[in-house]
Length: 497
Image (cartoon, rainbow, N blue to C red):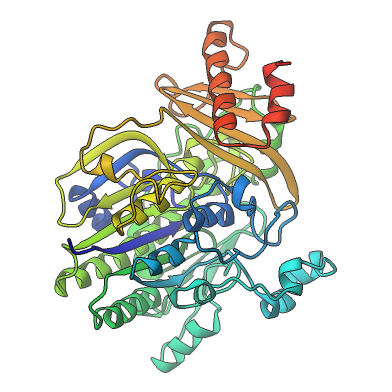
């Protein structure tokens, strides 16, 4: 049997309810919507961690952050591993062993490299005296250093607009790039702005052209290929071309159902991520830019899907569309960004998959996570379920309609972000969601009755049996997955001897 080509399209920090397959927000994504009509939508997909580096490392390793060591963003306090180690278990290395051509472009955020760290103003100002082992050993991690063909964009990238390779592309094509009408102030140094030089001058357009060129090269050989396209958006800064901002000009965006919270039983640690937002009008302009950015990415995805159809590649290609984690945008009394809180907007992710040879529109309700995506890709590439299982397992059988036993829980972890170290575990089971907040108040929600997570039931007497069950389930998960936090969790919540 001929192995399928595999295309993984990964956005950054995209709320799944921006897609009509998941929600009814006034966010225009016609290409993704059409794709979902031809694909399988996972209703309950979760990131392993609502932070860029940990989630992306899990996609490359199949391991939870507690096991691969990149537990928060690279070169942040609390992170154990700064540059993704090159091991035989990496997705790229295992695919190469299966005789796949492997390609990569776009956001990486799994390593910066010695030379780039030397010139990074933030790292040098706040962490420059730390002698990172990776730098001393020159263990740089970039896509091409771990087996991929394509592009190396080290570090975070802050939207990708300033990398030399992109600027060279603009110069070669006589294109100007300009950002105007910048707005900021709603949260820290986050920004939104208008790209006034046209869609063809954007980093998103560049990524599609690079993807097409690399796939064209791959198709010259009689070998299957895997390609991972990684957008920097719709993660802030929300810089978006005029053509897509115009879609939202004059449009009123209804405020979130959970924009106002006011529940006293919420963790105080959430205040770390609370912006300067008192009224919906304080955040609505940023939301419009975020939606416009999402619409622009959707347009570019449409261009790529059209290319695959025009070159007769679409049918025999496994296409995966997902995001590393979600986004908040002012929920629950002005929360911005991600991490520290475990609400659905940041922990649940879009996951839409078209198998090779296609399928009819379907929805699956099983709980899956980022580690499962790693295993599924390898399973489709020819490895057995046992060979591709690490912290996750392949859901290829679910896609193909097989009757298989599947876990009834899913867990998201977090260990803090920036300079804030804070251990959390979130577990979903049935209609219930429990969040262990080490050093703060825990959270318990019934998502069937309270989908917007407004009422924390942690102290409700009627919910104590459900709380006990969820805490037991989390303990069992920790035990099964060798989670080192189990010792503190046991001491603080389980009262076990």
